[in-house]
Amino acid sequence: MQMTAKVVGVILMLIGVVWILQGINVLPGSFMTGQMKWAYYGAIAVVVGIGLFMVGRRGTP
Image (cartoon, rainbow, N blue to C red):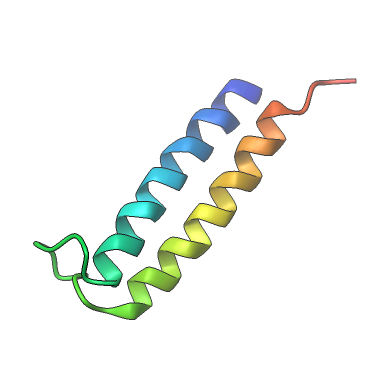
């Protein structure tokens, strides 16, 4: 369970970074390019990914 949370967290963080870069028009080539709402969605994905990663790092008591 912990390893799954860490892996999903890292993947979500990477996807979030891509969405942010596309939303702020740094990474072109998608329908998301230049649309700020995708930058916001990406920021949310990064925060959730960090949360999942931290949950996965926490040891079982």
